[in-house]
View 1 (cartoon, rainbow, N blue to C red):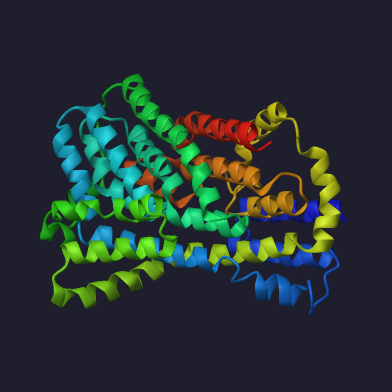
View 2: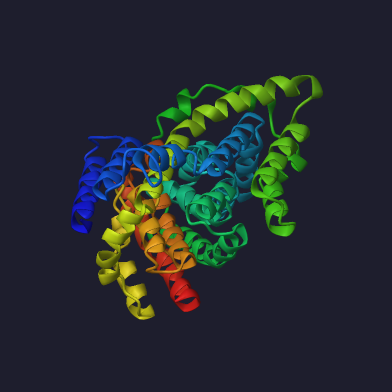
Length: 426
């Protein structure tokens, strides 16, 4: 029975890779198939309808709310000019020094990455940052990669990600936060190294060809000018509350929304801006929220007693227990999280993580180390991820070029995460 489930999983991966089915739909169909194969009844306890679909769909509700709040805060950073002001100030400070400009844009990208992820984060930092870097001679692939590496450096502090791993792996927030703090130095070091090495290795290229630069209309945000200096602290507010004062994630993010609003908006305009940005946030958050509904359903399916019983011996046979082998094997498997592969945590990888925990193969905190380390790779180098596609296209290169340039650096980040996991939790 376990072999049949694995074959169905492989078919699901193939459907996602070939784009025969959207990832969310494929995960739901996969979950239902796994439940039936595992012998789950249609209704009742541990059933397809009541357990997998009814209980699984809202299982990650807290994560979905966090994603919405992050998107809302991201919309405010855009509309109020906070993100644009941060980038412009950095570019002005860097002048015609390419490395300084790139490091400054990297810093802004890291800040933005703590607030929201995916394409919105790339756009907030990249709309101004990528043209500015190319204008001072930074190669286009390096400019796109700088935005992505910066977002990934901020990812360990992205509060919606904390909520996701806490809920999906059934771990307390302090445990997730603790590992993220250990992962951050690797992500930051790789990002800085990327900028220092790639800007020097490739040299200066003065080849401005960004089509959108000359034709881009002046937005209302640009007409309003720079945001006040104290409003630029907005991305830090949720982090200070969550890290320094251990305030819960959702209130911390709401505080960031209110701070952005109060420091940039006149009282008579607050109501309209609140509603406008909130409605815009729903548009941005819709796709990831659908994906999290599907992931919750998949997690419910792989945790069914019949599924765990069928998969446990197979998964246990191929899962290394020796710490050295653990690091070696999972480091070699890093490419499997690319192209929506089986180790992508926002796809089938979530189901595999659920099996590893439910079957008792690894402690949940070790699975956290695996999942978050792979996520650092996916968030930068996967040519199918929205932030990679947007950054590459906006810079005038292909996502595959960005993948090849950034993959060695994020692979090293994953290796660092695996070493910490093996040394601490195995």
